[in-house]
Amino acid sequence: MGMCVMDFPRRGDWGSRPGSPGWRMGCPGSRWLWLCTLRLLCIVPAGEPVQRGDRDTNAGFPKAMDNVTVRQGDNAVLRCAIDSGVTRVAWLNRSSILYAGKDKWATDPRVVLLTNSKTEYSIEIQGVDVYDEGAYTCSVQTHNHPKTSQVHVIVQVPPQIVNISNSISVNEGSNVTLLCLAIGRPEPVVTWRHLSPPVRGFASEDEYLEITGISKEQAGDYECQAVNEVSSPDVRKVQIIVNYAPYMSDGRSVGAAVGQKGILRCEAFAVPLAEFEWYKEEQRLSNGLNGVQIKNIDGKSMLTFFNVSEEDYGNYTCVAINKLGFSNTSVLLFGLNPVYRAAVKSGYPANMGLTSHPVLLCLFCVSLVSLATGKPCHRC
Ligand SMILES: *[C@@H]1O[C@H](CO)[C@@H](O)[C@H](O)[C@H]1NC(C)=O
Ligand SMILES: *[C@@H]1O[C@H](CO)[C@@H](O)[C@H](O)[C@H]1NC(C)=O
Ligand SMILES: *[C@@H]1O[C@H](CO)[C@@H](O)[C@H](O)[C@H]1NC(C)=O
Ligand SMILES: *[C@@H]1O[C@H](CO)[C@@H](O)[C@H](O)[C@H]1NC(C)=O
Ligand SMILES: *[C@@H]1O[C@H](CO)[C@@H](O)[C@H](O)[C@H]1NC(C)=O
Ligand SMILES: *[C@@H]1O[C@H](CO)[C@@H](O)[C@H](O)[C@H]1NC(C)=O
Ligand SMILES: *[C@@H]1O[C@H](CO)[C@@H](O)[C@H](O)[C@H]1NC(C)=O
Image (cartoon, rainbow, N blue to C red; front, side):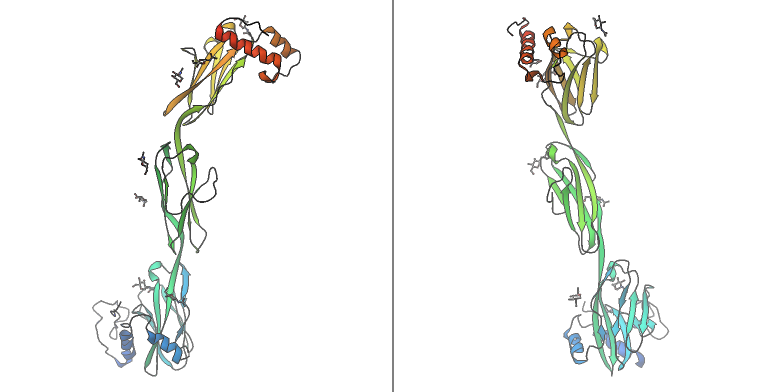
């Protein structure tokens, strides 16, 4: 900025804007002589040694305060300490005069005069915005020597996330990129964290969260944080749903006596949740037919026989299906002979595992062998 854009009006042109017809170059009235020198001064680049010289030789007059740090929307007070030798004072924004003495030059209503005394000359900028940031100059005339002192207004803005990716649903193995854009002054630091399950450390330390070949463990909530020193962080959450084909834990075979109730269960992990089908050999089973009920809750399926008969014994297949694929597992419904029933009746806890007692283990083995071979087994 080597150019001086400040100019001053002829008398009667108060309040008109630089560049408007009322303005012209030159230094007309004697009263404005010092303003003319202001105009020359602003050709001198900011931070010139002249300024430092002022402070050294003149005991700090004029003396503007240190830099002013103010939050966007707050008011900034610019103070300038002066001494009695001062005859004229002004505050400038870059090269345009805001106030000269008690006279307002700025058209901006946010700029007001606070103090115009023998010792202090202060103005206030109300509702500071980011474009107000920059150098402001207190300029004084003492014994025909213009002197200046500069203060920087630094505008702070709390962190704010202005654009963030939507929650998404992707298939396992996909590449995922999430974006989180934030504004603020100073520029906020943006990070991503995986919330569920909570993992130590960051998933990403910038605006982009990039996941190559996403796994089902990487599904869940991700949190974007924008942090600067101005106020508390801005935080937003994004959910990544990872779809995958069903996979099943092994089914458990179940023994049930004729005339009793028998329940076969299977469980599938899948996103979206799996639908279930039950087969006996090639035959698909229907809910409500032949005294069976099929009930599906939260990825689990239950096949209930209300009144087990001989024909119900056999090998059942549970098939779990979603849009990405299917999986199946087989379980047996096997018969319990009277010895077992007697054992249960005579006080073995009903929930005792089949493998926890030699007799029961043997019975279990007999039933399986019978089913597999079709022949009875009398080895026990
Ligand atoms: C005031 O702010 C300016 C611009 O940011 C900087 O160059 C200068 O060092 C600051 N001065 C003080 C005293 O902090
Ligand atoms: C200071 O000058 C800048 C640049 O011309 C302008 O955008 C801003 O509004 C001015 N601020 C005040 C308080 O005059
Ligand atoms: C957010 O960022 C994306 C990607 O850069 C862009 O396509 C979209 O228009 C932005 N949305 C808003 C509201 O700025
Ligand atoms: C995912 O990214 C990797 C590495 O950048 C690339 O090799 C692969 O082709 C991408 N996969 C898809 C489905 O875009
Ligand atoms: C179970 O089925 C048998 C043979 O079909 C029948 O005799 C019996 O009454 C049924 N029991 C119940 C409780 O439905
Ligand atoms: C049940 O049937 C499935 C296939 O339909 C087979 O793989 C499995 O071995 C059978 N189980 C028994 C105990 O026969
Ligand atoms: C069970 O899965 C196997 C492959 O894993 C498939 O060949 C078979 O047909 C499936 N059984 C049923 C009843 O869907």
